Amino acid sequence: MPITVLLISAGVFAAQSSSSTGRRFENQYLTITILPAWTVGSSVDQRLNLIQDKYLLSINPIFTHASGVTGGRFSEIVGGMPSVEGVTANVDQPAGGFECAQWPPEEMIVAKGISLRNLYTDRSKAENGCKFPSSGQPAWFGSYFSGQGSESEYVITLAYNTADVNTLPQKGSPELRQIFSDVATMQKSLSLKPPIVISSVYPQSAPPGATVTIYGSGFNLPNYSTAVRFRDFPNNPMPAPIIAADGKSLTFQVPTSRDTISCQAGYIEVRENCVPVPMNHVDINDCPHLSGVSSNFCGMPMPPATYEIWVTAEGSGVCSNLVPLTVTEPKPNPVSISLIYPNYLVSAGDTITVRGTGFTPSDNTMKIGTAVINHIPSPDRKTITFQAPVPVPAGTSFIRGIRIYKASVSNANGESNSISFDYR
Image (cartoon, rainbow, N blue to C red; front, side, top):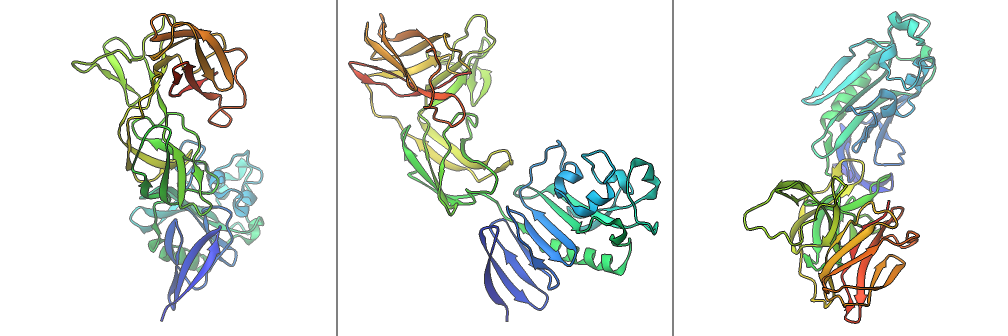
C-alpha cells in the first residue's frame, strides 16, 4: 500500500508516494516518479535535483537562456558541472562541451520530444586544449536535453560530479547504461505543470485606480519579478504588485492611464499597433504628430472595457492563463485630463500640452510627482501648455527605479485624474 509523506524542497511543499517501483514526487512545477536508487537533493530555486551516487539529474522547469538559442551554451545550462569544467579546463570560455566531444553528439530517445544528447570525450580534438582520460578510452562527461515544454521552456541535465577526467564513466560501461536507463524511465513519467495559474479575480470589475486581488499559485517564482499585464497593452507602465508570502495571491492597482503613440496619416494606434482608421472615427483624442519628431507619445485615461489580464514572471517567458477584468467608468470629475503629450521620454524644459475639461482661465496647477507648476492659464478652459519641470522630480516615481510619475491638474474646481509621465 503506498505511503504518502510530505517534504520541503526549495521552500515548496512537495508530496511523495512510495512504492516498490519508485515514489511519485509532486510540487507546484512538476510530477515525476523517482526510482528507489535516487534521492531528492537540495535546491535554491525551482529546480528539482535528483542524486544517485556521483550522478546528478537536474530538471529546471523554468529556464531562461542567454545565448539566443534553445538550451544556450552548455556551460550556461549546467552552471558549473565539474566534469564539463574538468574536460574543458584549457578551452577558452564560455565553452559548450562540444569543443572536446564527439560531434554531433549521440542522442538517447526517451519519449516523443524528450531525449538526452550525450557528450563523450574524443581525442581527435586534443589540439583544442581539451583534457582526456590517460587511458585513452572514450569517457562520458555530460549530457543534456532542452526543449519547449507544454507550459514553459525547460532544461534537463545529467551531470557527473568530478573534475578528475580519469574517473569519468567509460563509454558503454554497465554503470553508465544503467544510469541512462534510470534517467529514461524517470523522464517518461515527468509531467510539467503551469508554473503560474490564476484561479479567480476579485472584484471582477473595478474603476481605474482601484485595488484588485488575483488568486492562484506560483506568483512568487524564485529569482523572477512578477508583473500583471493587460493583453491589449502589455507594455503599459504599472507598479509592481504586492505578493502574498505563500505566492497564492497578489494585489495590484488598476491603471489610471495608458500610453499611446502617434501614427502615420490614415492610421491610429490600437493595442500598441498602428492600424487603418476605421469609418466614422472621431479623432479628438488621438495622439497628434509633433513637428521634428518621428513619433509622439501620449497619455490618456484608461478606457472602460473588459480586458484580458495575466501574471508573468518577467524575463522568463512564463505567463499564467488569461482571465477577464472589467474596467468601469470612473466617477464624474469636474476636472479631467483626456490627453497629455508628450508623456514619455520627456526632457526637462520640453513643452507639454494637456487637453481636458474643467480648467480655469488663469489659475491651474500642474503636479508631476513632487514638482508643482502654479498659475497656468487656460483661455479656452480645455487646454494647458507648460514646460516640463526643472529639476526632474525625485523620490515619487510609481515604479521603483524608473522615472515615471503621476501627472494631474488641480484648480478651484478640484483635482483631475492622473496620467503617467516619464522622464528620460
